[in-house]
Image (cartoon, rainbow, N blue to C red; front, side, top):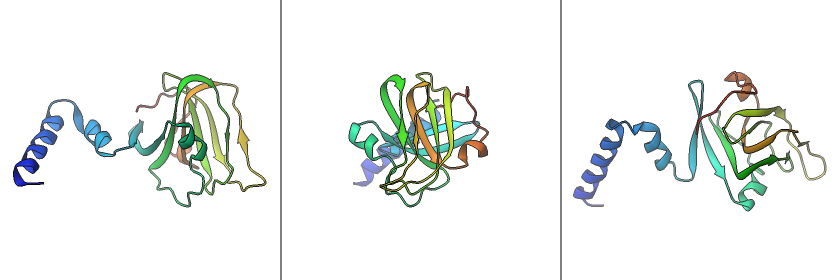
Length: 151
């Protein structure tokens, strides 16, 4: 990239920062396939799982997740959605949200599983989004059913 291109890129970033579009939009576009999820002053950088393949894999085989990281599952509609912990090595908090991004069910501290024994969670509530965070995150940020997340 030549000096002229770098200067134009820098000016575009400054434009976005100072025109009310804000830093969040710049970070979201910069993060590529990731999004920021916000709640009560807390932000999580989440990988987005939209395809069936991404959703089936989820956080399987992941050994480490930073305290501000997670995964957001995005579906085209609201329905009952089950999640299981097969081949998941981390304890997780799972937050089911409706189309308004309102938490409708929270499973705290879902335990890791292996190929033979694993936990499955099947809430009665319908959801369009499911957010997976490190176990303890929901309590740490004071998240409860009825709260609305932003992303």
